[in-house]
Length: 280
Ligand code: C2E
Ligand code: CA
Ligand code: CA
Ligand code: CA
Image 1 (cartoon, protein in one colour):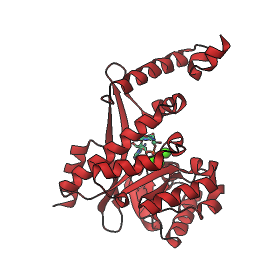
Image 2: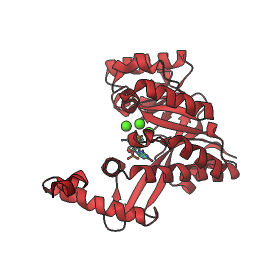
Image 3: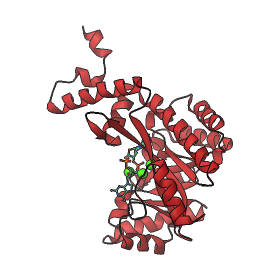
Image 4: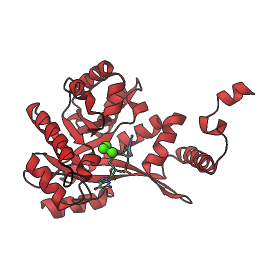
């Protein structure tokens, strides 16, 4: 009996509370969704704007799960469950392939963008990831240099030496690398200086209080100066107001991403947004 329980997903063995019931429901719904060949999933794309010339230089692909009865479930609710159940690798591969195919379609339509794709912690640890990445770009007919892989600071710090080697090999393949949610554990700054990176994404938490908080401003300034000296791009996340953007611009952050400039949108909508903003 115990052995059976141990083989089961954690959430099943946990005592029932209203929370677990909901999670269980999500769990079953997720398994079913995967058997439906990802039809309940789609990607949205949020534009990234370069402050020096106001051009859209890239997008971040973000996953959406829309269940026919439950409705839209936010990624922070279902991605951890998929991680726990070991289902994230299948979804992660679908995300990579879909984003690469979309990039190809945009290129065919004369829309040239950098495509940022999030890698989950478990996906990052998958030994087959390099092959999956290579196959995704090859099959879609896109170049790795137009793909930017986002990994989080916390994942990178779990095994700094292993991460450095992994990132080196991806860069040798031509991929670009961004460190996501930067600034949460800035004790790791020293290590990060050794990581082979192209972009630092400044966490929304710092952007949120940048107008009111001198210390948050100081942190963003320090990170930006460091990034500049290393030749890295900086993307400020979650920019919602013009005042936030003005501060970030004055500090020297190179790109912004947030509701102020553009929300995450479907591929066709993004194409219209791009053409309206950038002209032909
Ligand atoms: P993240 O990678 O930090 O993504 C940025 C999140 O901030 C997105 O939430 C985006 O919609 C939201 N956001 C963008 N601009 C603003 C703003 O101005 N204000 C506010 N309040 N929020 C803004 P989303 O799409 O709900 O994703 C949440 C998290 O779920 C992501 O955080 C990422 O950790 C994870 N995630 C989303 N899509 C994927 C994916 O395709 N793969 C993986 N592995 N994780 C994903
Ligand atoms: Ca991200
Ligand atoms: Ca982020
Ligand atoms: Ca975040």
